[in-house]
Length: 215
Image 1 (tube, rainbow, N blue to C red):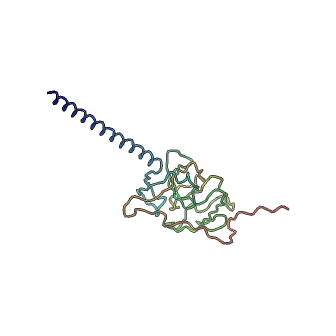
Image 2: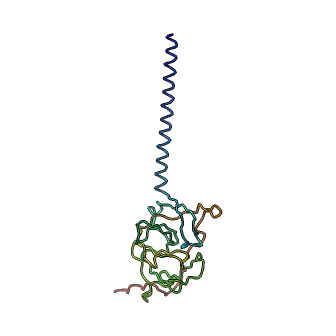
Image 3: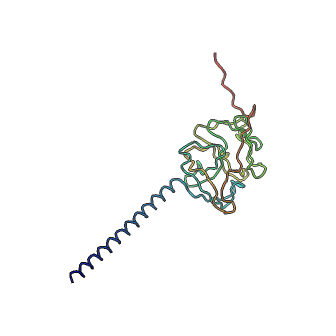
């Protein structure tokens, strides 16, 4: 009888040990899952494109992955497609392309963009740009983008609310950089096949004037 009691006690102890081991494993998996979820949520986000302001680079109901830590490592660059909060709202997300950087002089005339007097070639525009195709509209020969600010526009210029209307945006209103498309599947991947090209060489269109030398 004593042997049977010992065997029963040993079996119960083994069962408790196995149950405890299983609970520890489950707890470890849950903790790891939470850590991964928090880490991924901090680093990336899914973005649902609503509207046609970035057509034809992006289409209505596209889904993207955006990188939220990229701009913690370096400054935004011209041509980046970004997720931003416009100055007029903290609860609305826009998706636009960076056109002009801090300190650059921007001039738009008849749908042609000039940066510091040099023409910006934009191969991604889907059609002739006819609406709101001059900036600034006060007759001056351009406007300098303030420090830590960026001038953004949608690729579909005739159907985009952007910096032409609400002005340059500050860096702290940029929430992330669109990374790649995940839906639809037949357009999965790269969204940067076409990028703006700033022409080089002498130019005087909207160029910043050099400060006079003093001797």
